[in-house]
Image (tube, rainbow, N blue to C red; front, side, top):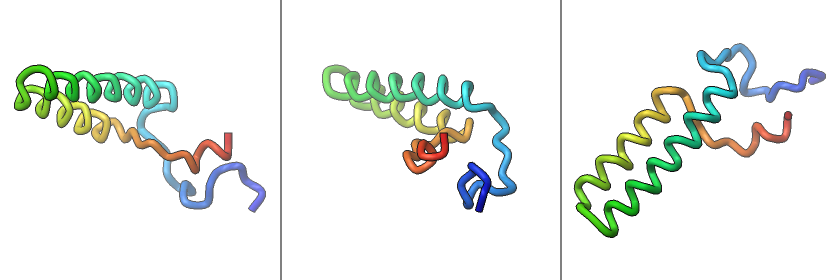
Length: 73
């Protein structure tokens, strides 16, 4: 295979470009950490809601952490 794309990514075109997905990844990562802090030091129900919402938002944008993709960049 001479292409620089990973074999499992053939035929898949993300809706959002890499910059948008990276921004969403960082924002939802921070929101998840904030949710953890709220759970630990404040109201656990609110913290769980924040953390869950962060994960759902990240999934809605198609954001995943995949270190295997870094080998092709």
